[in-house]
Image (tube, rainbow, N blue to C red; front, side, top):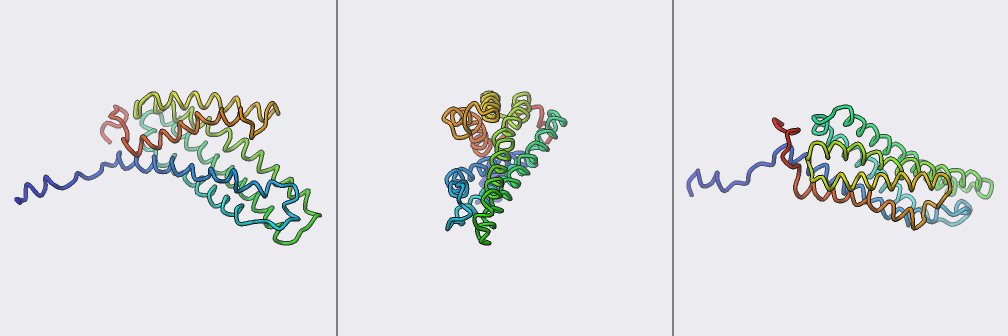
Amino acid sequence: MTNTDRRASKPLPMGSLRKTALVAGLLYLLTFVSIPTLGLYASVRSPNYITGPGPDAPVILGAMLEMIVALACIGTAVTLYPVLKRQNEGIAMGFVGVRILEAATIYAGIVSLLSVVTLRQSGAGAGALVTGQALVAQYYWTFQFGQAMLPAMNALLLGSLLYQSRLVPRVLPILGFIGAALLIVASIGTVFGLWGQASSLTAIATLPIALWEFSLGIYLVAKGFKPSPTTSGM
């Protein structure tokens, strides 16, 4: 085999834009590791958890999964920012800020639930029941204004940038817009007590936003960015 043949047989190196899309897509998919927390946190939400025998391990595991999600949230914004700012730097900065705020609310919720675990492990007893219930309520509202509402803002900001730049098929950001509208309605209804956080209506309303983020992650991993004037020269 000649030197020319050897060079021709070598795979082409992955471009920086392709790497950016791949990392961002993987981080988006990583945010779905928190799905098991719906079951892992079932025990700590019990009004008498502090006086009971536990178990603590599911709560701690759920907190670890949510920590991963919080870091992945920040990672998606930081990874995409160099590309998105070429379309609109102000909106791109807004996306980064909201993503960081979402991560902060996740950490705040984790602290609330792990504080309940600490009270139980320290033998606080029945005297700490009210404190434990207050911490669980704090987690509920932190989740409601964080993970349940901020993804809608993320979808509007990121979706508008991707729609204008055509870095991905426009059907994806359109799905994000639809999901954002439904999620905002569901969140407002929950805040005002029109339906519960775990109601079937809320679950249905959250599906499009979840599908938007999952589909975006899959597309970025599999395809990367589409050719666009926004990325010309990068």
